[in-house]
Image (cartoon, rainbow, N blue to C red):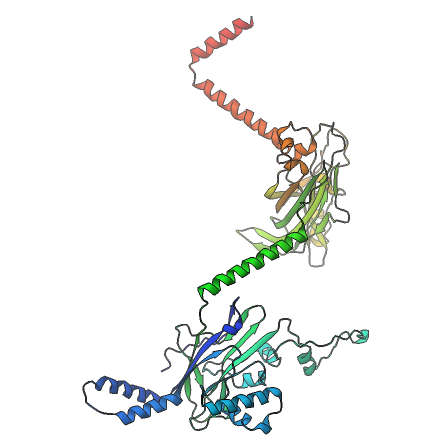
Length: 561
């Protein structure tokens, strides 16, 4: 009989835009005993043999139906709908036992229910969010299954916290500074200080699994289903609906240890087509109003830089570094702005990543940083008559490593020229480090951490302070090390980009040179087009007959003479 049981008693979380008051759950419990199984088996045989008139078991059938009413019960429970247990009926029937307004209301409801004799439940009842049912009762009378696991330390501690509606406690304005931190909090202090940000309403569907003639005992009450809902439309149900799975197994405590089947089904009615259309129209109106409200906050005017200024926004990421000699790598970087470039005041143009250990990826030691950086710069050329090509910002970086004694070693220097075209770019920059000949230098680098360093990191390219015509590095020894991978997203913003008349004119200003495609890119494109045309001309020339080529050469020489 253990076949077909559903052992997954965990909670499930649902999200609904509909009001939680429309939630309906159909609960059915059925006793599973040897007597019930035998009665059901014999009842099926009676039904099959009644057509042949073999036996008459009317008395047995009536007894079976009477037993099935106490061994099986089905009830549809709505959200925060109160169904009284036999214990509550016996308790609240006496008016002297009712002290609170809620209990007096229960007394009135029970008296009216007894007079009308319309009680729908016997074993299944409910505790609403207003009833006195605490967490320790739920933990003590929880759903029992044979494979019950031991609760964890966190579950035991959280079981002592009441997940009820958030109480609005007055906040004391004058808090003594000497008691800002409670170093030894008590258990009561932890309970009272545990505040839930989102108010949650809780409801319990219970079951009285006692014998037929002994209903109304507190020790026979068991939690069948726990439902929690908050103001954001999140509904938590434990255990979940059966959904064509097997029944949940409930096992009572005591001498008999009876077994019950539990079935949970979502009995909420579907929304009508008219109501659904009205709700969708209401949501569309709400979203439209919210969009208009956000537009009113943002405004209609798009932020534009002043005329003659190019705004360059760089959002990048130091992805990884690979191919270096030692572990525990980190990268130190800064952005160098050439002439006519400026940045936002108080905006940092440098940074350092976290220290990262390497891992082996395809026989290569790679350190994944995933370190983001962002720069915002502006270009404004004062002398428009200067026809020189503008220079772009350069990102200089240095890769270092830490040893066991927290001493650093220089692993490599490199640079990255910010791309002149907007969009997404992934660039891998190779690095090198100064090399000092001799074994002593390598021993010093391994044990002490000292190594030759560049006094000016811009020396890896052309230093900004260099004013000569030729930069000589004769005699400077270096060693190629690893590489660093960057991901760069560039945004160019200028008023000239949206001016249609400007795009039709001859590009003369610096903004036109930097817009869309830079002048460097335009020159490169022209050279590539020239090379392609020259290659096609050479291929066409090779396909011509040799005598025709000689004749044309003679004609050219005679005409020139």
